[in-house]
Length: 118
Image (cartoon, rainbow, N blue to C red; front, side, top):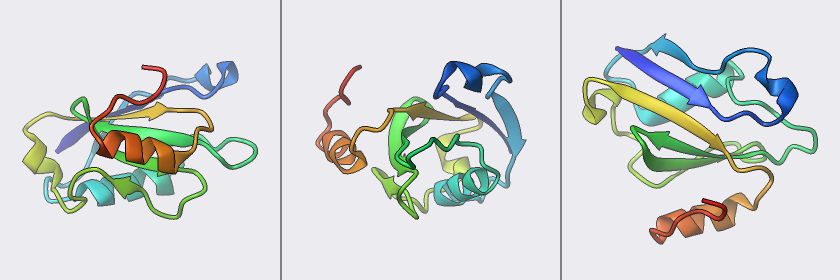
């Protein structure tokens, strides 16, 4: 299935090339597998200091917090949900949240609150 992926920029120099693209993944791929696939291919920018924090939105809904310093993301939904379970069109948007504490961000989102600065 075609999956639209995009991410926020981390700095002006990061805008040299567009981040939006379409990737082909099996419908049976889990959201956790999709994130692992993109991280393995360095889709998310790494920053000096190693403390970048991202919110993953699937079709506009916060689904996970990803931190450069974490080995694995923390999920707000079941990470075994397949891409196909999100519908015929799937969009993965990674929103850069600078170097804010990813644990605090996760707790905020898990409580159903809007993240700081939105």
